[in-house]
Length: 300
Image (cartoon, rainbow, N blue to C red; front, top):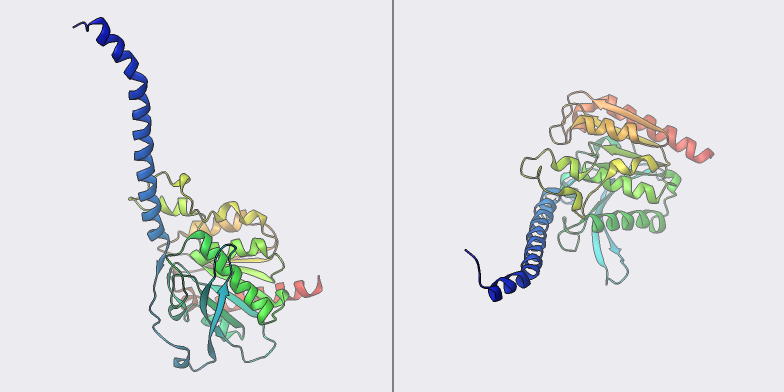
């Protein structure tokens, strides 16, 4: 059927508008998908727990509550909460321990047992949104800021020399620790336990995220692209039976890592039980790494 000439010309005039409308609709759909993707992935990344299941006085060793500010340009600042686990020796080396994506300091005490038993002082901060730390739901940006605030507290307020201060991260905390170590190569060493290559690669392991445009997300924790730039000694620890972060990811991080590095496989270790399963092997590896890297740092 042929349209009248005037209607036909009007139809041609309307085509550009239809094209533009289609583009706008397409962008709107993409925006909604990415917004939903960002939201669901944020809850996949972070699982904060506000409830503390223990208090410092519950332990037979010396644990103290610590509060410290996070000062961000243009922000009034918020307060972080953490636990300082003191060592028996006044001159003991110290470890900044960055926990994983769930729980809080009260659920991390078992994971730091090897460090405490080896005689090191340990500071465990809770990121904003976790435990008693102030702030809203966390993000990649805010947890990096929180780790930096903890470093400043240890160096400037507690007076710990970087040559005697180690950065330790478990799981998501490993990605945060890698970022912090890039900014502080003067640290004595870095320990990365049960950590992943990137959020994008982790999401591929979940069917509900596999087809989403992960490369467009703002929260990436792209450790595999960072580790080659590390310029301090690094110890990687990974359980061979890790059911959350594949053991192969730990190996990938190790192979791509720059500087002096070591890798220890915990036979049969799952994601959260290396401290219990690793036994003397794990403790000896941590002690050798800290003592040897510390001695090197002091003589450089």
